[in-house]
Image (cartoon, rainbow, N blue to C red; front, side, top):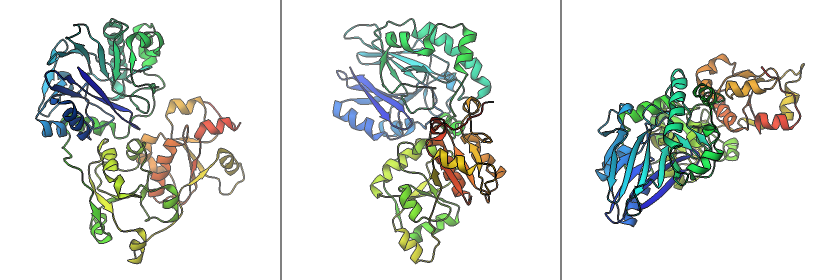
Length: 464
């Protein structure tokens, strides 16, 4: 048999190609939108992709299942509880998918979602017992899937199902069974997923906090407590995956001159500037949204741009175009119309506006001095963490506006007044600051190192 894991940094998504080399057939499990990698590896190994299997309908990223099906003719499989609306074969627990000598035993394992399945993989040339488990978003390395992404109101019920799944499905497996999860570190689908990308049932049995002995009620409390912020646009992503994503097709660079781009802006397109912060500060187009083209782009864009808006990119290197398009498409931003091929000097030479400056990064001690009583330029401090984080300790006088709520609540703030944005470490606040800058706020401070550095600096926190 053959198995390969594919990992997307930032989102922390894992997908798999598994198959029988003797018979030349394979399945892709939880495909990413950049499907060419599966086609390339399958061709190298002499495999034909005949099955596309979703362990569940995802809420954090858009699937590449329809793209892969279009290019291979493979059938898509989704558990019947997912109520998928696109052409597929419904799965039930207890079924066996045969890929030559490789058998995938389908286990119904609800908890993260109502439609979650686990695939127990057996290589029948060696034995009928499962050798590995493709656990999707149910069991991770050091964690288990969060139960609230299909709706907070369903979280406690799903957490109860998770307790049953962990105890009656996973803990009954042999210690030597390999665990291949659907996510690793960086994903928001768990609380504290480990950075190691594979484990064993035995190791998780001993060291995974989610597998510690608990009553069902105690586990429900554990699983629904201290959850991180939800992925941006998670409800829309879930709905897209239920309908079936529109295939992206082949992604090719689309250079736009200034004159090419203007009609798009006149029709409401956004400019997403992905250059370095230093380049953006030196010169940029007023109203452009700045996010760096790093591994966190997929996680951040959902907090600063609506998903339906057409997007014109400003890139430091046109060679980044394909990578950026897939980073956006993974979270449902499919409407990239191209990238600005002319420089901003050309933009300015045509009489179009440019400006300089940006959100200012400040250290916690600088903020502490700014918020001292009597300071005439005292900023409003916005804490964009989750309520449970805020309650554990926050800057005196800080207002809680979770990052996922900021776009809808930005009208509560006065853009003429200075605003300082803080989170735990400086990552979420960068997204929040970009949104406020795009909305025309005159003075925005991003607190470097966030609440962690504030606390390390010996500055006061309050709890409530």
